[in-house]
Length: 424
Image 1: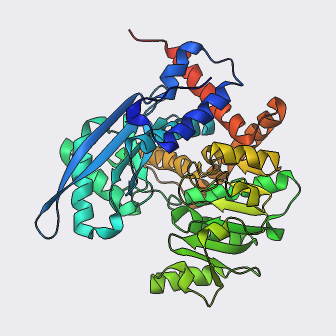
Image 2: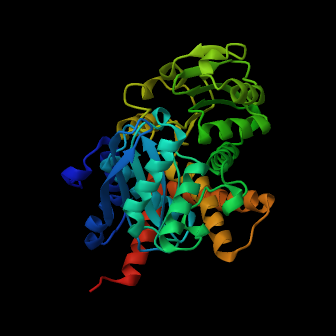
Image 3: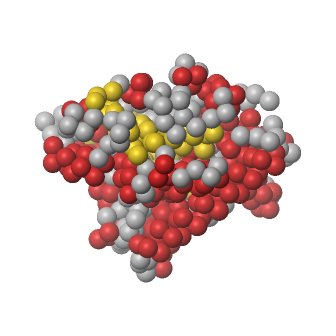
């Protein structure tokens, strides 16, 4: 089965998401009446965002918010600020969020938002005006029982504070649970900033254990040193792993004896310089060379479609743990499977962020804060249980971990649709 894609959603990342969906559905007895409903977003909006720049002129940006499926509860998904953001890309990310929340057993559907902008070129005041106008344009879609944003690429806790304040100003009172990933002072959760990276680590540890391998004896390569990659590197280093290479958008650092991750963190906070400039810790390496280094675990934690049919034959790892969304193309997936390299898919590996976002949303609704140790414990329980459930399903059905994870998520969403029926 090959799904036809509407022109407005046509984008390489959306084509990848739909191809993965088609592949999973080929192993399922899914009601044919649900196919078209699940392969396209339930709601999608594109908005113009006029912003007065610091020099006085008005610049118009393009923004999007997509709600893929609302059958299991309010939608949940990040907001990204990046020059490559399109409706198709955001729609793909929303679809993956639907399967991710269902897989983790969270009472959400999938959503995603974004603005086509390079946030590094805007001042703090311009970013604030951009965020507030964007939220005012999509305000009618948002709400703690409708759609709950979170940080993503190019956004952070401060961005979410502006989101919460803008929404609260428009309704006339403070609404803490309209957004997650906020600062602690306005209802954020302990452990939220590192949650995605911590979830990646928990899944990595479980994958190694499944094959009687120790994290302390493992070499790790991490592409991307943003929120996900940096925290994954830090926690893996604390767990005794040897992190031999890391990278940011400027390039990477490589040290076969292991990088001093805490020292790099300290130096980076002081210098704010690109990673390749820290040659006291390792030798500079190009991003494309980093992906093919010999290691036990490769963690792509940057952007989509980094592992392709071109470099997949050159990978020298045993495990690929997807910290980013959609970092492996469909062709590369097949190559890695043939080569016996296990891929732990994004909708499982990077689910830690949305799991702890759920905890934050629940804490705000209850007006009660949880201790950080409890949050870490609950995250570990949910994500490791999901790993073992998916691993067993992959073995039983003789499919890849990605296909097993997608089957699990799609089945849960299909059950919700079948229970609710069709209105009117």
